[in-house]
Image 1: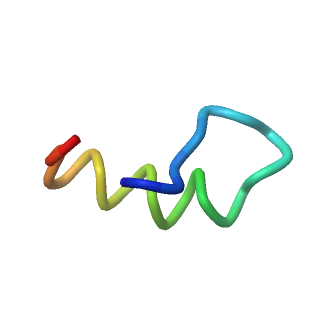
Image 2: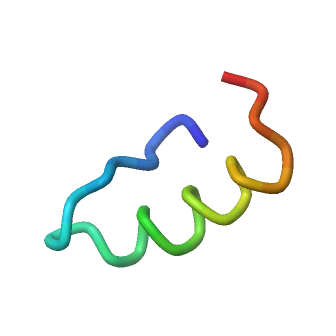
Length: 27
């Protein structure tokens, strides 16, 4: 995920971006 960051403050990005990046890590 482009906006995914391993931070507890960005739950939205961590959830949406993190999961999407986990499913399809395209960078």
